[in-house]
Amino acid sequence: MFRNAALEIALPGAMRDPIKEPKYWRDRAEATRAKAKRYYDLRQIRRMLLVAEEYDKIADRVEEWQRRGEALVKSTRGADNAVD
Image (cartoon, rainbow, N blue to C red; front, top):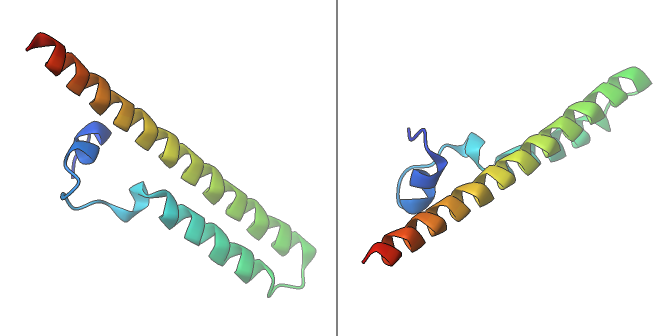
């Protein structure tokens, strides 16, 4: 809905997209690892584990974007207070 992450953080009551949450990606990684345990073919297992690793990387990126958005909101609020 919002294109600006800072606005999403500034408006915590707004509806959030689950794919913008690190937990979503961590849960997918965990589910993919669990699924990999059911395979016998080593190539399939490696592929599944690589996919899980990529999901973890996405979760890390989402966390970083959220931190940057929070820092942006804080710096904007600080600038607003300095003007008053």
